Length: 124
Image (tube, rainbow, N blue to C red; front, side):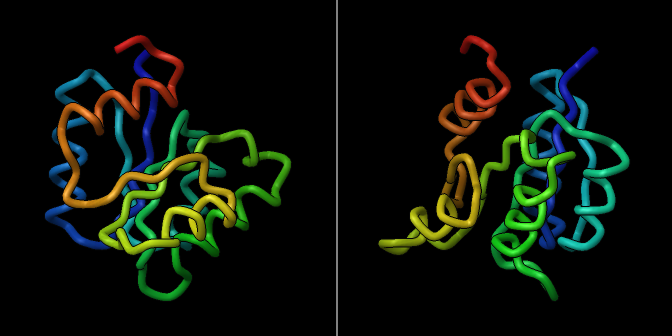
C-alpha cells in the first residue's frame, strides 16, 4: 500500500502542485485547507507524513504541529513544514514547534521528492 501523505495548505494552487508531484511518485494524498480540518484528518486517517504550511487561516501550522506533537496518538507522525517564509530563524521556529524538517517555497522538485522519501524511510 502506498504511503499516505496529508497536505495541509490553504492555497489551492500550491495544494494542486504538491498533490500532483506526490501522486506522480506513487503516493496517496489527502488535503486540508485549514489546521483544524487537518488535525481532524490526522486523527481519522493516520497519515505516514504531514506536509504543513505555516501560514494558515485561524490556527497556524506551528500551533497545529504543537498540538500533534503533544498528543501521544499523533506525536510520531513526521511533520515537514513547507512555507514561503525563508527568513533567517524561520526554520528554527518550525523545528522548535516540533516540525521534523523544513522546506521553503517555491519547492525545488528533486530536493522536495528526496526529502519526502527520506522522511518516509525510502531510498532516493
